Image 1 (cartoon, rainbow, N blue to C red):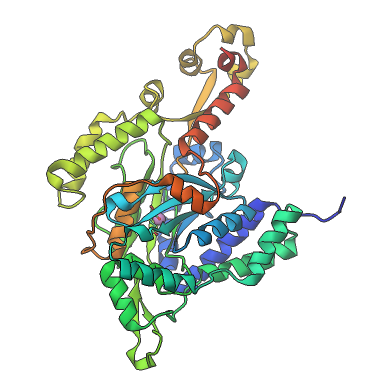
Image 2: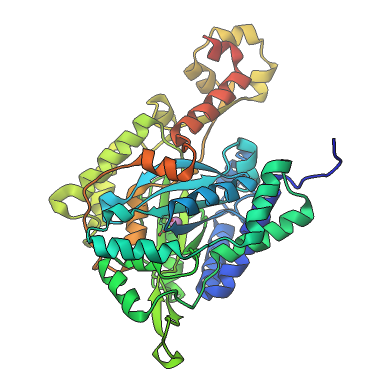
Length: 459
Ligand code: OOG
Ligand code: NI
């Protein structure tokens, strides 16, 4: 027995997310401007009483101001394995597998995030984490060189490694240890303006793929963006432009709808940051373009059936004449295609397209439970015995992620790799399996049903 009190992992995550945001704000001041835009737009949106009430019911009112995600790109399998252990200390687990090679980006990815209802509502901080796929670099000489450069680096401080081990053996960290852990962990995500290679090597890797240069030439995997959640991305996009930010032309994801689904995202272009290369004098220093700001709006999580419909409609828009997301009429084409996706909660629920959390209403609690047991789920909701609250999508979208990558790597970046999803290879590097994101929503829905109407779920 020992009487040490551990700081809950939810609190370590909140602390880390807050410190990371402060650090990024100091490193990329435009991110601070973006936070201001989102705070203004969200305050405006919350004047709408129905939206406010819905956020309150879903337990999202408190989390909205602190909610954000970040992204890093790693170079080595062992970096990914250690990252998994580091995020575990903060209550974050790998969820989902994203193959971005289809879109010409030689990485595959997962999202580290909390998974329980309570932790998500506490602070849903997520980090989209990518691993470079060296095997997709065709030139064997270049591949070996990148491997050799990466082999020389260690992106974690010795102290953070010791604290991860401490957390693993003891089962947690005290408040003081957690403070130190957060400060040490941040070192991995910080921007380093000194490259680990010469300008000539950097230029060579840049020519192979901008992403390879970004991953391989630096001491660590600098956090490349942090994304606050907005309640109205269309307004936020207009406001970004009005305040002089170079917003991306197209909002990634589904079109604007009455009932938002999944995830819509937009960003401003990466900044040029000064870099000192090995062997260069200060006068010959160059720049590197990688880091950016992004905002997102989250909507209803879709079932496998809903997701298949989303994917089909999106590819109908994107594959038509190989148009992708280019062209002034993209928004119109997107709107047209998505007229086939029901835009009201009742139809989405009855057609099994979205996930919902169920709870008895006051009327339902007061009722004779045996009488309720005779009714169908549909009738229980329609007649007001049971509330059905849509579940928020907590994950990412591969096509959108690729679009975000592309727009921040430079528009000339259209390398193509044969689609070759390699989840098993990724999981071997990670040292664990990733959780199936859709299964998590299925479980959340089933849990709520079981608690609200046990007689139904038993059937
Ligand atoms: C990650 C891009 C993916 C998102 O929001 O879809 C992403 C990256 O650029 O490293 O963050
Ligand atoms: Ni992002």
